[in-house]
Length: 371
Image (tube, rainbow, N blue to C red; front, side):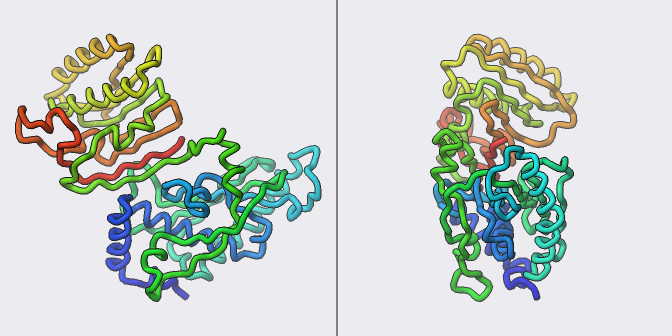
């Protein structure tokens, strides 16, 4: 048996994914991954052990409760201790964790692989169970799926499942879960019905997060020629509260690229102007024809930023390739095109030279994840 959606022609599936991505303003990669996450949840909660499992964590806030706009990432599961033979919380939780680890590695993991085959989505899917000590909790299963969409940055076409034991029972409710694809095309033959997933109540998750949905990352797809886009609108909120930044962008050599970089530095300062000190490290590279002038420019930037208490350093690395911003507040911003997201303006007196929102964008994807 083969899954009806996977049985569609490849180009039909790509078109469906791209259409949803366009409508939702997210990347096609996120739409495809959401489908695989949802399929995985469907398989798990059809297993014999399902009555003793609950779905929890940040992805459940999105998939089950629709409280945050977040692309589906990892699946966090908790096993009821009674299923593992513990009627009460043991004094030594090591025994509980060991029993949980045995269940995951010897029962849950092989059954999961078998169910993927039975459901018709196991072809070309690869499974790994990460090595761990006997009492390590949670255990981590990686599911690498065949992708139609090019992955963004260092993100893998992978669903990661974390399975841990529950020493205490958390309140939960049954929530209907469906993929973006099944929701959009619910009247077509290949669409699957929404299904119930027992999900930890959001109050329990938010309480552990200090009342804040700090795990709310995002994914955005920006179209070619799109306007009204600025660094602040894209990721300004994720810069707040950080004092250390690492920016990797291998292409900063022309005047407009230095302008973009200084605009980012200005935004970082605006978002954290009350900080006593901000450290900013740039990892980049330049061809030998540009290296001397680039070094001079970065020295001038260093002196300029020092006046607003930003300690700046640049590291030239020939291996620099990925484009990202990491912040010590826990966020990583992955930019498909780096800082160079706008098209060339119409000259030095074009108002777009001063206002980012007036510039026309190049097509790119952005993903923000919690590290």
